[in-house]
Image (cartoon, rainbow, N blue to C red):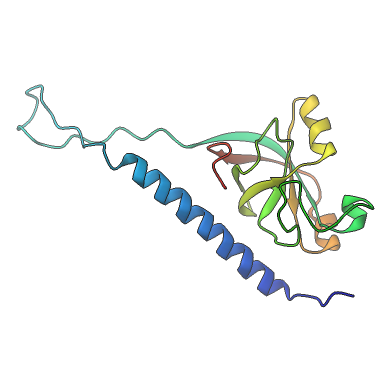
Length: 168
């Protein structure tokens, strides 16, 4: 029998992993925009060289109405072939990921789920594929314990889906 890891430790590890993912994402975004210069007025409406307000940058996410459910990496949730690995070959017992149908939301995409936070798509499942065939975005959030997954229930919510496939 495996020793139980305290929930607070798992949450801390998950938060640190999400922060690392966000820092990497921000660094990549900042590096890409370093060459852009701020626009200045040239049309005579103001003093030469006065900066004009920047146009709001293109958002790097879309908001989709998603069906959100939960699972844990146990045999009851994942079946008899549950081996502690996700379809993306990551450790399923690390609570940093979610499952989706990869044709709907590609692998390694970052999703921001209200009440859960930012997670990385690192797993898939047949239930998500069935939902996608009905035209529904379905996200399955990984939880550390079976009772938490059962208590989470089924929710429809607006989820931010960041630049697809850029989370790895």
